[in-house]
Image (cartoon, rainbow, N blue to C red; front, side, top):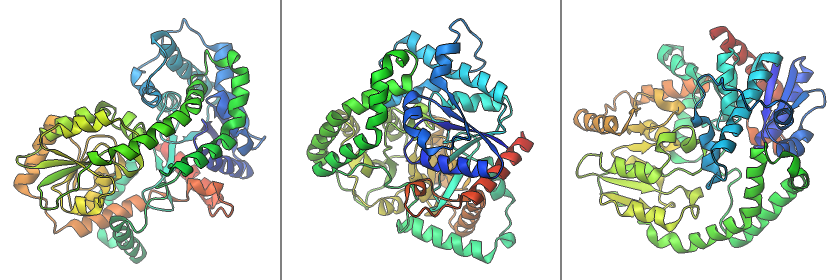
Length: 479
């Protein structure tokens, strides 16, 4: 097979893809690497074999970008939104922004037509390079495999449609109880028990998250400078050649220079915002809305129309059944990332209570009327616990029978009212959960992306490569 591997310098994933690409080459496959920025090229090439063919998007932009081209199919501005969301204050106007999106579209249009890879391998599309790549891959019938650590610890999800995999639902609907093995039943029982008790969390939890102590902030920054300082300095010295077309490197450079100030601001907020939170009262009647980390793909890609979380919370709060409250719980890793005004707007809504991040989310879910989420893992936890989950974004677990997928806030209100009138039948919960976990498990691959950094890497790259090859071939046949 001929693999196209996209490289943008994403932490942890790049090392994994480097080892995986070497395995592909050893097994007789061909690999072509696409570096989406000069920083990615300078910093990540060391992880990849020289036997792989490399392409620089930035070099292509300088040599081939056609500003007069107007044919962009059904491409929309939505593909740019994740970059705008991550940047905070987007520094470019219409002309520069249009060029940024057009460059990526033109590159992947020519690249896919010329190179004709059998599959594209990267994380789920969540930026202005990967999203046009995914969009054009579908146009040309090329499978795009979005690789990410699974909610099942020690496993990998391989998404084929944004942040979903059509086989999860198909397997669930076709699965018969008698076809489930004793080993699968035991796995499902242990998984549900450990997942709901948080005894074993998904592999990605806690990875790369900054700790909150002042000394840890300093240590974290020094460590990051050691990791990326060389490529950043090289780009800074050469940026006059590239800054007009390399939007990704420009954004990362701005983040790097602003990081000490952002860390200091966050530390100050952590110290002062504790008084804004409240404790939950399990005697209350409430629905739970867990706040999302932001920016991240769950808001900027999976639920873009709800990315303004304050407005979304206000709309939800005035749509739930009277006299219920809406509990809004901050994410533990998001402490200090939002201004006071964000929380004060939420607290000004009369039926909303802002819950402290350290509150026990298992208890909050268990005692709630249901969980309302954009695309968070709390929705999956809710359905496994027998509570309805109302999911506003695009996420894989919505095939569970206790999951609701309203198309808008009005439909959310109607679904909540229907569930209150009819109640959620609990007698089939164990069977639903068993089928859900087994159908999920059967379509994942054993492996962990972050293991690639470990001294004793436990990943079986030969098996992972074999499974990815099988999935890619199956998707080409389905297409």
